[in-house]
Length: 615
Image (cartoon, rainbow, N blue to C red):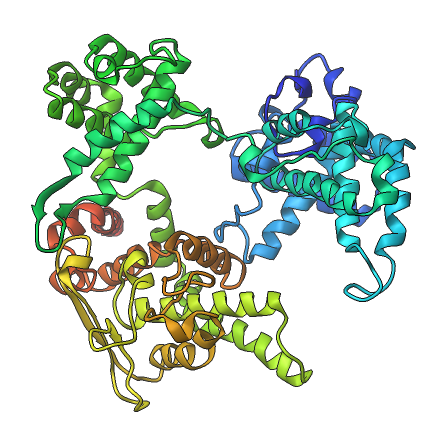
């Protein structure tokens, strides 16, 4: 039975509306086959709308690859299997087409489950929320920034939040910090953030004294520090202990001149921190570690505790991502990190070593760690097999540049300055275009190195000549690269335009960054003087633009995978050249991209058999 009241967390407003008796009254979980029958029999829909809904349901069945009678009709079908950012070019031509499909699937599903009826009932209630909205409405009337004292969109957002509060049975005056934290714990993703903003808006309204009788007696005070962490807090003493161990393992060879470690494996340290935090939380959850345990060394010296934690890690491979899934390769990597620290502490590592060597899931993790991830392989296969995707990939820098120039041209045509939103949009589009031009026109470098490129000073890592046709030269010292090898290459001017796109970025886009004039970086930070653009922030923005503008969902790192796959597919005998292009070894290419050759061999075998049959 699909019981909404039993779900502790949710990203959907509907799961908070426990008054939806249509859902909880069912004796068993309904199926998508029943949903389809229900939609086919609806008389309140026009023929065209009904056909579109039925088409979306059939498409979902084909993609899930199960009979409709075997798919449970629940909100998770859309939220988890078809999330907002789940566009896949294999099934839809554009992100807009995917989102249209998603709406056509979600609308009949929500009506079938009674969500629309529950929301309508909440929306129709006349209560203290209604009184508050009536009192706030005059404050939003007039021109924004002129006559209106409060932005009308804030009122719209508050009305949406009221449905959540009503579902809990809470009036505006009932809201406290404790209740705000409960709401925050019950929701995820975009809805969680929307709730957070609405709770803060309620405190904003306190500046209008006539509204005070309709608001909570005391400010809610729902600041960032007061939010409920998505993960349970950890004993701070534990963090102190294992951070010291990790530093001892990952930092070596102190240089008294530069006052730093010559060998600092920051990436591995990041993995190790995740390993300890995951293992400790699992240990507490399964009751093998006390939350007040003082000495972690004693915990990690206990083979039984480590085996129990390892077993739980392996078991989590079947969970969904939101429920804490751990892939076998991740579990194995974490356990190896724990054993590395155990060796540093002088603890016998034999038993955990046997787990890593002999456990079937650990072995699967080892095998997976030596091959490309399924997600990256699917991306590369799509580029190799579909010319349209390949063209989008290779011309992505120009598509991103065109989108930025369209915004600039519109503002110029209307003889006005760019809005703040437009400036932020153009900055990200231009930065993504420049990054893609460097990756495609030069060579793929890691996004961390790209964001740290300096363009100012005698030791600038990227030199862009004042002469338009002169090659752009890039040089990254060995001490700044992942494998300790110098990266150096030119970017020549030609008819494809990546050279010109980099110069366009420097001339048009970079000045839009407030800190551009005072910082040395090609990609300066937006707010922090003298800093470079954060690579995680850029990575998220780049992935979003590639999905929605270029219609090719991918991450910055997949620039590297995509180029390598295309080159190896077209030029399989140029392994040495391609390996040099991505600053890797021929052996690594054969290991991670060997599936390309395997597929060619299989297809060649099929051709031979066909020839034999035709003989």
